[in-house]
Length: 303
Ligand SMILES: NC(=O)c1ccc[n+]([C@@H]2O[C@H](COP(=O)([O-])OP(=O)(O)OC[C@H]3O[C@@H](n4cnc5c(N)ncnc54)[C@H](OP(=O)(O)O)[C@@H]3O)[C@@H](O)[C@H]2O)c1
Image (cartoon, rainbow, N blue to C red; front, side, top):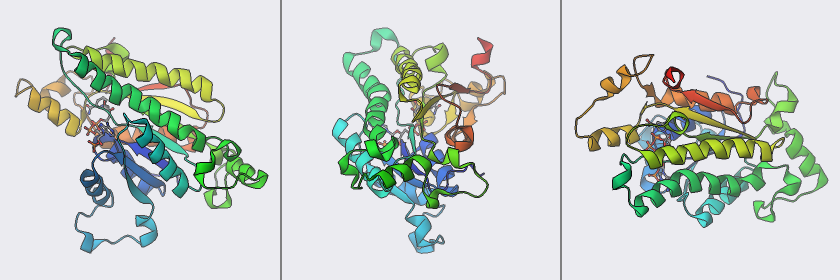
């Protein structure tokens, strides 16, 4: 699938697993320079090999230039210093700019109100809300026109460089693409249907995803016209997060039973959600900002 993201610099938190990993692969196949952000270096390396479709390093078939378009950055999104270092690293390799930030890092905890400790509350809010906020704050300078980017980006801020950043460089040029869309910069936050309509047994998770929805709308206003900010709200998606949820439920329900609750009769694959992420981030959607997009097989349409 082509999204028009060739040569764009894409940072994906949670890029080592599930939805983020699927999005990373789709962006990479589209020709983007992709940076996966996660806490664990081992998981990061494994994710890189999964993206290129080969877990045996002796069998690499891609040209070195394609492999160089894919990197892992170890960072915990709950730590401001880590977020700044991740943005700095991606910004440096991205020649001073980051085009697309996908905030997919997130955790789910199923606990009713009476069982939620302050530590549980802080953990969920820290990753899902503060992590999203800190990554946006850290990446913003690299997403603005270059004249406003900080010195750490390692690039001079001449009038010529600033103009190039605003309008896109020759290297960004894509056959048949409107040059206006080359300067398109976009943030895609991953919330949840639970952030729109609520859900049983996970009040803090719902609150955290509701906050991501609100943050998206507020920042879409504040960051316009330089940066688009949109939010995707998946229903249940077949990822390690869901596997963990099922394990904790100890067989009280299955994936198939979860799917039966959806108008479309099933849950989503990570690739289906990744497709929507890449579509929203595509410069072809340069007029879309502040949008909250359910990808939930019709679940929220039921009211
Ligand atoms: N799966 C679903 O049914 C579903 C439904 C609706 C919404 N969502 C949302 O979609 C997003 C992705 O979920 P998923 O299902 O793909 O989950 P997943 O497979 O468990 O992946 C979660 C990712 O987040 C990263 N992460 C967690 N804590 C982090 C931290 N403190 N710093 C940096 N990275 C961190 C993990 O990397 P490391 O562990 O390596 O750090 C991993 O790459 C989440 O925000 C989730 O709430 C999922």
